[in-house]
Length: 170
Image (cartoon, rainbow, N blue to C red):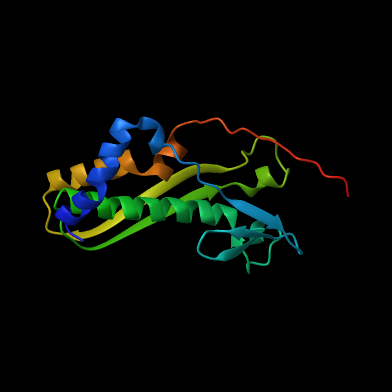
């Protein structure tokens, strides 16, 4: 895809969202259903994924780990955004990879230490680019990628999470 093709796709959407801001808010959904062996099945929209415990918490390593899935979502979102931004600003990327990694102290999630946090302590995002773009172009590319990457911005900015429950008699 080139810059003009991307613009042709996005211009009507941008116009629609300017004219009717409410139409730009869409609720994305995810669902998991508990399964046997401390796993659950997650509907991804493209395939069913079985998620389970990480081996550091007693899992067998055969199921997807939700921590890995979070990093995969970050790498995917940053990669798609990088590709779209590069296209929009005419930066030719011959090859690009996005790597996400994070540090977890499993004492927190296992309740071994109240001082150990539950969740990632640090997350790092790496861009490996093969391009002839100038340093200024690359700086702009990465700045805009971070600015428009939904998962990156969600992780960077505190948000509220509403928790509800429905109880059905057994």
